[in-house]
Length: 322
Image: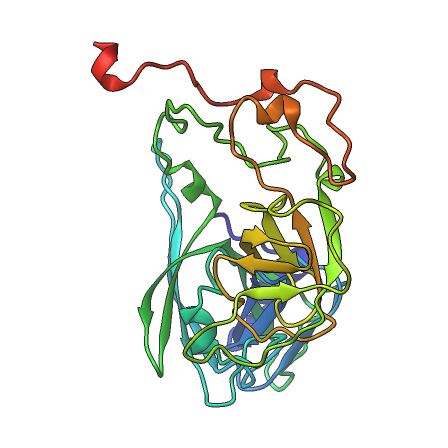
């Protein structure tokens, strides 16, 4: 990708007096939980204000030199050609014993093992500072790379390796992107489906906490009171955590009774009593569901959404198609 220099930084670097200036890479990682991991390969923390020229984020951000371990990057590859290919970059972390995942009591290697870095957005910048003025980034910062963590090929106790790619990697998809199938490929209440998620969801508070997975991981939630919806109304739906250590993470609902929700897998972090969750109804992805679905308040959906159905239920099986 194109390197972005603010004009003030260009002037600073063109000054012969700054040929031996200090520099440090800044790693701004937007995690799936909504938290941000900000690290630097410099010797000390660096704070970048929101009004610093070239800043791609809002608000002041302090990049930690030690808190999250040692972070470094490899070469950034890019190609100027008529072919569409994504630029790539390798990212390495050497965590310490005290390096924990932002917002949770989980080590960084443990978070990587639980896929909590998958799909994280990453921005790599370089700060240039005058000799003897470490931390002074008033001249601006250079944006070197923006993309996504796509793979974790190296996961060890003392070293983590990530592969990153710029947004062009999204073009590396199979064509055609949609397969001929009887069921609808859309997610319930997404932009293709067209239904309003507020009509099919509820928010509730969990009243039973658990503090460790153990040999038999717990994958249930218990609410105060009872759901007004019938049993398994939310089966195959999505349950999203709104507060607590799991905030921002989601799980699939296996079953639901009057007051207990069973998930297909346990949460990554311990669940506390008082944590709040949002749950949305599931869908069997059939044409009948586009017309005869029932809202969370018990009323029937008045509109007919079968024109938005994305499947091909009348396609003959391969044995009959020839």
